[in-house]
Image 1 (spheres, rainbow over the protein chains, first blue to last red):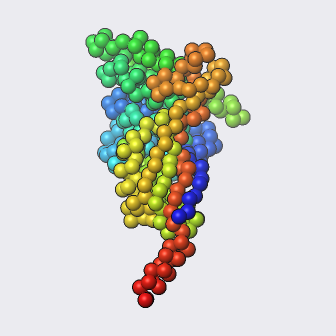
Image 2 (image 1 turned 180 degrees about the vertical axis):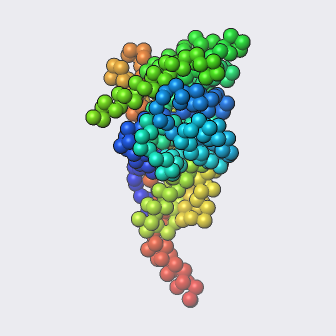
Length: 220
Length: 131
């Protein structure tokens, strides 16, 4: 019998491709944002409302198990859109993003939004090559979800609480969300907004612009 | 079920190493799994079994060791043990943890039989058969 001792990360293949994706985005001064949330939190609607307000050329990569519905919704807004169907896969992988990037001409694209598969667990463990991880929690999901899915919130660079216009109707306690986040992540800004009414979108757009100009300045 | 994609990456690495070390079969695989990765051991075992079918590692035993979360506070630099539901720094009370352990999945060893070991056994059995 032979024993082979090694210390090698099982995630290294994914991480290596993620690093290549990030470098490609850097070369084009494109800011990559990975949007992660449960299904139905309003990721696609948020993008439909965000992109025109940003006023920068954007591309969107959409991950879903099936259908091109999200990509179709976004394509209307003359945004470069790639749909990735993951089939059985519950999250996007860096390889799928690399394939998606090959289909996008990044020249002149300032923001790439990667809309991950709706899932609060699996996407958290996979680096796609993005610069920032944005986690969206929507009010109808309940104010207890931060405590229930801690890892995705711990790894977030920004947290958006969407559909805030429904908070009163649904007895949603923002304080409970903030109390739970205090144990997980006090570095990420928390923005409350509503993609439907437009409330709070300006702060989000401002955050995106700031992050991009900071990176562009650092690259010079 | 991110265990399926983890198992696929794992089996790829196992097979690469098996070829490199001229293993004819792999009998045991040991991985250290960080708690932060939310891996369900039973799910990973099942996914590993499925991914290893009809390979050198078919039927190999998968041993999992859990690795606790260790954090470095990005605010004050303190290093401490964090829990999956609490990353607050015991020193400054902030939750700005950079994870320094418990956030990876690492293949640490594998066991198997080399081609020559196998050939040796085969020679012997052939001899026995010939007698």
